[in-house]
Structure formats: structure tokens, C-alpha cells
Image 1 (tube, rainbow, N blue to C red):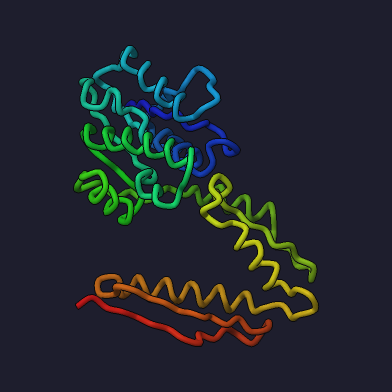
Image 2: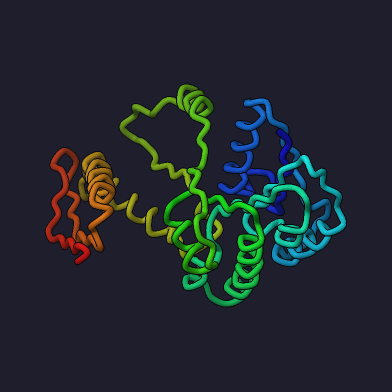
Length: 262
């Protein structure tokens, strides 16, 4: 099994973020199973990502691919050759770009709108479309008119994570620091600052006692599990406010509303 991975996403954590990690983990998994993965990436630098992606995809038209290869293009990458080569072409849509447009403004919105058009072309031309969640599959149907996308959840290298956890045991000191592991740094709309402010408040601010973070975590997990169990009938769930009491005293949902489909 030979696969060609086409991506303009930088192949490192700092610039490629979570997209790189997902692609890299997939490549390692395929190689572990005996498959062959070759990366096709831009061989040049350009200050503007959208322009770099476009030029890279234009250059793909002049690249030779063996008919034995399966071509996997990530997000918009590969749109220029999808359906125009003898190889099977898979469009792996990590996140539907058009879905985030309502939350962007200015130059970022213009750039993403352009890339969304390219991603739509890619998905419509591909022999197969895969995406990591049912939500993304629904957005592909609604925004790109691409139906029956195959849902394949993102792979997680559990052995690697277990090794990292063993190498970095939890701090037992009473003066613990709040650490966030996330891929939200690229976009202000993900409101990372709100999470950091909330963490400061919950840890005890201006002489106030620390909040019951453990109970809050359990409550969030319980709500998520409930929403999943009711997924076929639940239309909307609103819990507001959710009061976090001092450590050891739990949380209280002061008001809640559940609306079910008719």
C-alpha cells in the first residue's frame, strides 16, 4: 500500500499545530501496519499562507503520480488534481473551513473564504471524502453539498501519551500551576483568554477560596454524556448559571433548560 500525503500545512507542532499532529499520527500508524507514506509539501517559502497554498496546488498539476498510489489531500490541498489522475483520490477534511467564516472578520475572513472555495472544489472532485466527526460530515453536506462523507475519528497515539504522562507525573504541591494543552492560539475567536481568566478565578483570586474544580470537571463530563445519550431527541440544552462552590462543596446548576425535538 503506497500513499501520497499532499499538504501545505507546516510539518511541525509550532506552525502546523493540531492538524500536523493528526496527519503525522496517521502516517506513523500506516507505516506501522506496513504501508508506505510519502509527503508532498511545498518546497518554497511564501509570506502569505493562502497564496502559498494556491501556488503549491497549481504546481501539483505538473507532478507525476503513479497509478498505484492513493493520493490523500488534506483540507484544500490536492484540489487541482482531484479527479484528474488515474490514482484514487481521497480528500481528508480535518475541519470545514466554511463553517468558521461567520466567526471571522477582515483579512482573515477574506483569506478563509477563498480557501473554503478551494476546499469545496477538492471535496466535490475527490473519489472519497473522509472527516473526523459526524458534525464535520453534516457541515460538508450543508455547506459543500458533499454527502456520505466517511467519518474516521482522529487517531491518538495512546502509547506515546502514556509515556509522556509517566515522564511528567502530576504535581502534588499545594502551589500547583494551571497548564492548558490546546491548539487554540491561532484564532482569537476561540477565546483562550476567557479560559485563562476563569482558571485564575477558580484557583482563588483576591482572597476568595479556590473553586471546586474537580466537581466542575465531573459536571461537564456528566453533561456531555447526557447530551450524547439524548442525541437523537435533544434539540437544545442550556445550563445557566452553573455555580462553582468552594473546594469540596461541589457545583450547583441554578437553572437549566432542555428542549427536545417534536
